[in-house]
Image (cartoon, rainbow, N blue to C red; front, side, top):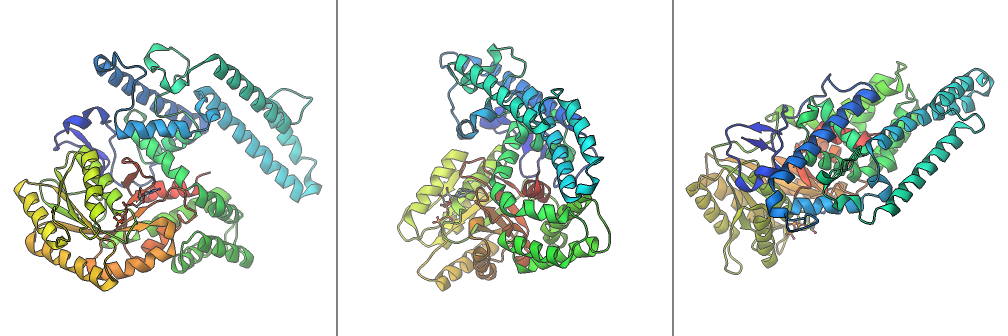
Length: 535
Ligand SMILES: Nc1nc2c(ncn2[C@@H]2O[C@H](COP(=O)(O)OP(=O)(O)OP(=O)(O)O)[C@@H](O)[C@H]2O)c(=O)[nH]1
């Protein structure tokens, strides 16, 4: 039994690939689930859920450590041996020390403090807007603050700041006592109140990720470290888009009925996030329909905004096959990967082949970017990393269509389930490139008439609207069926995802948020929108 990373559920029919057995974790879920009613509805429930998930990951990791103990006995601290582990270690190094040192209790405190601060903040705003009502409102806030911290001499904010300072001092003190960073210590030897899990920290990002998984009907005991790591990465990647633009959007929408000024402001914010004119118009008119007449509480207005965005992102699926996007078992699937130079095609092939291999698919790569000599070498490196064989032609300036022909023959002879075809992103001119893609497509249709063919366009999100113009050209030559959106990490143009579906009418199939082998996942509109508009 193996976890299918495309469908995000157990795949009983697939054999477990031997070298990935240890990484498997057994989440059970429906593909592309709708937000479930089982989402923890209070901070306490959410924390309990997140803690249970954390504990579960911790236990799995401990049992893995025990299983691999004999091999690790003479190497301490345990060395990072795989790409995944390296990525995880890098992530730890990138997390600010203050966050790394968080314990479960401290995260709880942080969340509770944030809540109380938020209440105080709201109340202060109310006081500022309506000073004449100031006599009764602030009293409520005072009493809340007193309940939270009984120190009458200071204001709430001063006390909160003092507490934070004291906590920081405690952390610094304990950091001095420990000569080694906590991450490198074997977790099994210490019995602390909240031991760290190597590769993941119980912080606010963990709690948020757990909540997103819980909302999709996941059970705490089924959540894996890879899923948490990915969600944290996605949210972190969309941070710029969220901070620059979408948080302001949330604030306006959350204020209730939309007036003309609010509409103009929303319009400008969406355009800045590269959402595009068409998608912006659609969002505005949907919002106006709902919010023009009614006074909608802020949370409901934001929930409504999220729903609009999810519906837009899922809209191409209503016409094509709905559900998760996965290679069909026991038959040949050919995925043609196209896109301009540097969009991330080769990297995407490496990441997808990794997902396929660890999901138990028989996978093969065809290196048909023969225009750039280094491209074949590059894809071979990715093949080695993911444990997938690469079919290439060693000759110079070979015909890419001939490589595709050979790759299909090899795939048919070996009962391959997924053949990924790399293609050139640049030729002498645009016409040559498009002719070549059309020829490759014809070869595939002819040589493998029964195969399930997908033609995926890789788009660099950092290009925003400019990337979409290229897409239209590719669409004609390669009969595109979907998009892979790469480089979502660190761009302020995350809104381009909405433009992609609205303008091209194509579904987003995968998103990439980093250069590592684990930094790509099947697209989920729910997770994307939550990451885009998370608090
Ligand atoms: N930050 C980030 N970088 C990425 C991502 N995907 C790919 N890259 C980087 O983008 C660069 C180009 O990626 P390639 O996979 O070589 O792009 P390509 O489309 O195959 O390019 P050609 O082979 O020249 O046609 C590399 O440095 C990748 O590491 C991503 O999701 N995030």
